[in-house]
Amino acid sequence: MPQTTIDSYLDLLDTVENLGLIEHVAPVQWGLRLLITSGSPLAELPEFREHLREFDDNALCYRWAHPDPRVDALQRAVDQRVQVLTGENCSRQQIFGDVRALASQAASGNFDVPLPQAAAIPARVTIPYLTEPWYC
Image (cartoon, rainbow, N blue to C red; front, side):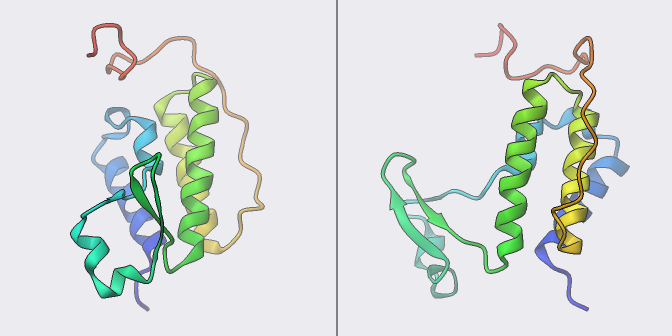
């Protein structure tokens, strides 16, 4: 059976976990989408053009849809969940666990499974965040 994009995303998450890199990845990274800017060679590929939507003048990129709508649904769910958990000062480990659960749910086609409530952590890990005062 061919591997789906969601399976590949699960493989990525497994690799990051197996290499012990969870604490080294900013949670926002789990939900990023490919940006297709004006003049991008991807926008010229016939096999990709069918997935392009309108150009967003505010974002300075094309909107696009993945051929598998579950992938777009997963990206939106991950982005929203990361924003909520980051706002609750949850650990990177907790956020990663929830992202992994969302990806597993997407692979099974079921987003209705409730995720556990996130427990806030009292202090940050020693790995810097982009919000550090010294970060330019």
